[in-house]
Image (tube, rainbow, N blue to C red; front, side, top):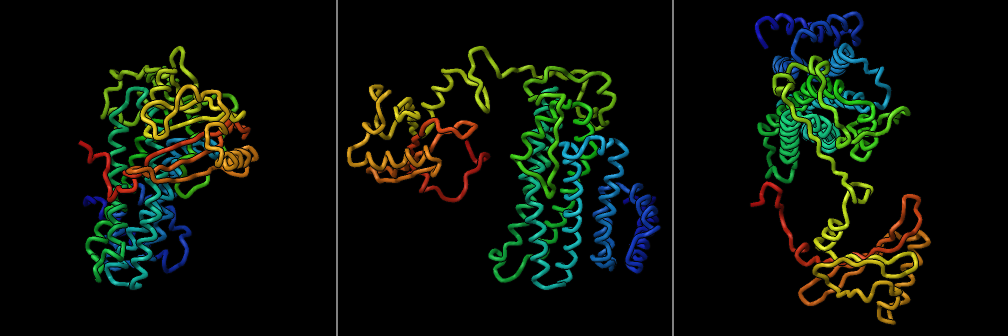
Length: 435
């Protein structure tokens, strides 16, 4: 915080004390918000921590979180008409999540003081762990939706550096939260909690999460607001529920005038008028005038239009031959229609194609086979599994009913796999460990 902000900080402290004495904000609210507008959002968590070091109680300053969030909302409202986006619009949902993230990140920073001063005993560590566990959901929901749903649309228009930088920042925050959760695991304390490490890491988590809120609200979201069409937002909305949200439950959002538009369907680049409206940070990171749009089209002549992609017959056959599992499909008439090639656990020959599946099993097991198929057809069961030892192999055999979108039975899939090596795995081997 620079020298010109010192008087503002002192006035904020005075206002906090007045708010605490009165029990409500009242007419002080506007002055408080005006002061906060003149201070960088990045400075606020540090200022809060400094104030606590000077003796301001954490509970007194906690009310600042809601005011800070309200300030964020109003600053955003100045840029965009969020209400005009409509409830449930994906961009509005991102902003609402950031309000919740800001509150929880600031609360985490406030709880650090309790731990440092030994207040509340073990309860203080529990509260810190609860907040850290809650913030851990950011990576699985909020950040993942940005990485999987927003970034492809930006990259399609030739802007690749911005998603790369933000993704690295996401991972830094994820790692810090993971570190904090590890430090808060009482089984790792060896009798004494590592207070300095815990409080230092908690402060880093708080700062990192709020830093991301600031970057998103001021850089990422203004960019996608300018570039993305309603069809693109509809595609994002349709896929968001499968990933999940951070502490919000958005309304269902629909635009009857457009069709969902996937990134590979975007053919236009960035227009001159859009360039002028992009945040200066974006203009500083990329030369928008020389961007090359991604014109790759995954749909080719002869491709099968599958639920989640496009493949030709050669690719489909290669995929099934490459999978480390045996696959056999029996149709609704109980006839063998397909089996995968490559190395198999149970031998199959083309002479089995079209054969009743009952004739493919020993007579003693036919009754069991029929029972499984009857249960699948009736909708009573969704899996049957068995496992057997075969010399050095431990074979896992599973049967699944295959149904269409309406739930109609199409047949049964048999999946067989040797899981001996899987059973013997220990510890972790992450992607970055590969060489």
